[in-house]
Length: 157
Image (cartoon, rainbow, N blue to C red; front, side):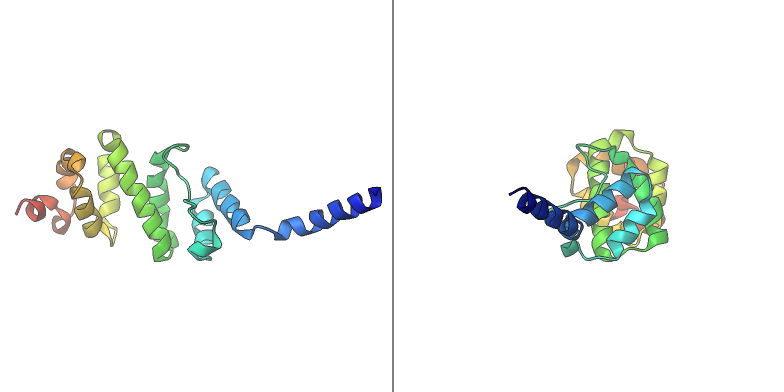
């Protein structure tokens, strides 16, 4: 009986590293993010499809656990890493959550600078403009945006 138990345990110890590859990818990405290795985390995500990760998984930073302000640091890296669209979309959603949640405490100039270089900026800003709570923030950063992104003429005119 002991031999059978030992063989069973040994078999699982050998197989364990090859099980749950989705969870292993998730853990690798999360460890890189928590260590501030955004380029590495983005590279791992870029080398895979969303289906390679656990269902319903969202990469950090998370609103409830992490410091969501780190999303700006991630966006500093995204243009250099040039991740696929699915990765960009995940982080655009996180940027939107950050701005809505902390609109009174964001670095306006930093966010405007980011938006000024973001290909998705116009669509992103129009979507933010649909949130009534964002009106004051959008007015505050409007003058910091490049002219074609300024919403005062698009939303009011």
